[in-house]
Amino acid sequence: MNDQHSFLYSTYHWLVPTQFNIAQACLQRWADNPMQRRRLAIRHEDAFGGLREWSYGMLSDVSNRLANGFVKMGVQKGDRGAVLMQHRPEAGAASMAILAVGAIVVPLSPQLGIDSLVQRLRDAGVRTLCADASAAPELPQVMSESRTIEQLIGLDFENDDTLSWRTLLARGSTEFTPAPTRADDPAILLYTAGTTGAPKGVLHAHRVLIGILPAFVAAQNWYPQEQDLFWSPVEWTSAPGLLHGLLAPLYFGREIVTTQISPSGAQALELLARYRITNTLFLPADLALMQEAASGSFQHALRAVMVAGDTLPANLSVWTEQSLGVPPNEVYGLTEAPGILGNSIEKWPSRAGSMGRAMPGHRLCLLDSKGRESRRGAVGQLAVNTADTHGFPDPCLFLSYWGNEALTAARYSDDWFLTGDMASQDEDGYYWFIGRSDDVFRAGNYRISPIDIENCLKQHAAVVHAAVVPKPEGTRGCAIKAFVILEAEARTDPNRAEALQHELKQHVRQRLATWQMPNEIEFVDRLPFTPDGQLRRHVLRAREQQRSMLAAAKRNS
Image 1 (cartoon, one colour):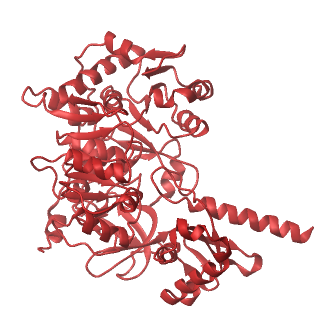
Image 2: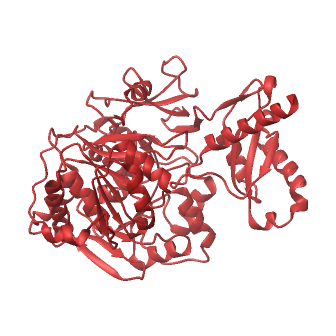
């Protein structure tokens, strides 16, 4: 293929206006145009299979009624409004309304437990909460413990603390002019999944939408094209889900499909075929469930599969290309810096196992432990500059960690934001993931990357998933400990456990270096994952540290 990366990267310039509002860019500019107002924005399938079609005009009318209601409640620029709903058009309308009044939207998942919800609501100081019935049972306790919430707007449920969604809409006018926000004004407060500790609030400006567009367009194989129809099961509470899965398609004025109950496996395959979906965004876990459920071929219209959230295993990449007929475009990013590198099979070749190349507009490098740029081929910490190669500010970078300027400053080395991920770069500019800087550990005289060992273990037919962490061994340092989930057939024979542990150790030893072989393997039924499918290794590290302390105390008693 014709490799166009060098040209695209060198000629790309950011064009960020001084004034910019996400609600205006994604909704109002289409609804205010008589030629575009009737265009479908969201085709929504409810839990019973019923279909509702929301035009840009309808979405705008609901959003404007809500925005007028928020203003009457006293919601002001900079206030925080949370949206606690399932995938549905009303969630999009509520988010747009919050952004339109100049407030900060805080998207929250109904799957969060009471403690997690309260922690986020209190940390953000949320004043207004829009929720649907999926979260209703927990809300009385959440409201009593959150303290800062002044108004709960309930959709499909009512109680003594609730203002009815229908009542609020009935009171509001469909005319509303979005607040004249600056591109640098705060707009979105996303909470990290907590893969390396307690969840942190990541504050983004309105300009972040412009910042993610190069990655979205590239990974969607030059979206939009005529007849493009987008669907993704990724929750709108994560950076990929909200920015790539909702806002980017609406920015281009195109149609998306949503479902109240997110389909997976065979149901996801059926949905792709039924709606003739052309463009999608998946997490690796979504593809794994589809691979597990697939049997034979099926009809579909896919032309682009974007993958985010975690590294895509090689076998899933091959299956996607062979079974879905589309090579996947992996995109790497963090909540703090979404969509900064990846692949686009339309414009440059991908390399199996790599993270891809820097997306146009983002200046990346690898830094050593002293903050110096690493040479090609060497391992360093991936960093993104606050400006592109032409000196223009990179709009995708976050503003700050909510209420924690010290932590914000700690993530920078001069003008470089430190991602915390270790990688190497080859001569052609492709990056290769090594592991989290806080996941890499020493065992003996060697630095151990969990990723290499986990990927090797997952190549064994009996292994579904694996996680590798250090096991403290007192003055001897750390050993390599692997937690492994076995496939169903292997789990049915408990007498084979010891032999299988030995077999897996030899499997690693034959494929990797001797010093990368796990010292201990523990079979488990589940591993700690975030809702986005990311492995929370810090939970396993803490477990091993606690076990080590208890064992030491028992020996000394």
